[in-house]
Amino acid sequence: TPEHPDPLVDTDLRPMFDDIKKLPGLYGDLEAQFDLQEIAKYYFDGQGKAVRPLITVLMSRAINTHLHDEDRKKKEKFWEDLKQLLSPMTLRRSWAGRLLPSCPLFNSQWQVAKVTEMLHTASLVHDDVLDASDTRRGKPSVSHLYGQRKVTQEDAIMFACTVSSYCVVFPPQGLVALLAASHSAVMAGDYILSVASTILARIRNEEVIVVLSQPQCSAAGQIQEPTHVDVLLFQVLTDLVQGEFMQLGSKENENERFAHYLKKTFKKTASLIAYSCKAVAILSGGDEDVQEMAFQYGRNVGIAFQLVDDLLDFVSSATTMGKPTAADLKLGLATAPVLFACEQFPELNPMIMRRFQEPGDVQKAFELVHKSDGLEQTKFLARQHCQEAIKVISTMKPSLEQKALITITDKVLNRMK
Ligand code: FPP
Ligand code: MG
Ligand code: MG
Image 1: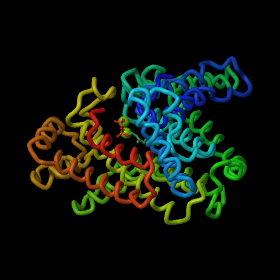
Image 2: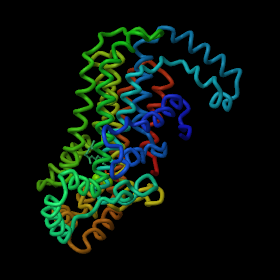
Image 3: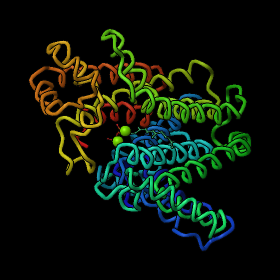
Image 4: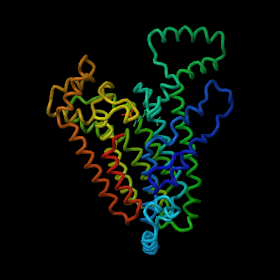
């Protein structure tokens, strides 16, 4: 696995992908028709941005330091002395980088970061089926590579005939295998989801042991009911699906449209980041204020992240993004740049309502968005969310991880991919 560009969490993230790739084996028949494990492992090659586990790990360390670090001053002095002695290059690369003055990460928090990346990946595997998208992260998408069949009318008729003959000739398992082969991407997503759920369920047992056995960090606050973490992350699953579902419809009333878009954006993208941040705050023993601080940071960064994603769909290229661009209009989606543009060019209104389905709609809407200041306004709104994210975490005691969380907002805002 390649080294993570952020040396602060390299030690936490590098083993994460190796660990994910050890997806527990399939039970029963290992002579399955296709190798589910191989498909499920496909995206865990360390090539993704890993923004979600990065934020989760940094938030954990920042909160652990905020809540539990009693020798802060001593460590800071040690670090300053060391910096005088070593060159910045040596500091980045050498063992010295591991002496950063932060509280350790609890194993349960690391597991949450891992689950976060897995849930996100599972949702992407499904998303590429829904969006009929052929590329992801610069390579063929799972659905493209492993043959998600698009069902045509002839397919449906053929299928009906096959079902009736199959049931006579073969036992039901044969039919299941036939269906399975054409829906491997959907099932690979389900499989990642089920493994992630298992890991999540196990945190419940480990949490108390890990939190209580931290040698340098005694839990100061009341330890919350561990089941809360499970509940939070299952809430994310509901949100992911509801977000995708909300995306299928546009509000008739123009005044409600933007609120609908923001609510959908929270569910589709920000919820996972926000609840992961909240989960690690709970695992650190944080009270409601700390949990809320973590949640609001994740919520704001998450919304900014999706706003920028919607912006990049209009301005970036497929080569840079590693996935198709100019795709949202073709999918019938009116995202922030279009909704802002609509205020200047009301002729976009009927196009939004018919989901850009008439010939020429996509091209016309694309041009109007570029003519308007919808792209600048989208960036402006993303910047406001980033500033809010920075504001909420400024209440924490200073730490290198807190600084890194601030720097991330800048990367989210100015990213090109
Ligand atoms: C990418 O959006 C998609 C998501 C952020 C969430 C997709 C969620 C589901 C498909 C629900 C199922 C969830 C699970 C956990 C299995 P996009 O299409 O706007 O972005 P893209 O340009 O990266 O494709
Ligand atoms: Mg989608
Ligand atoms: Mg998509």
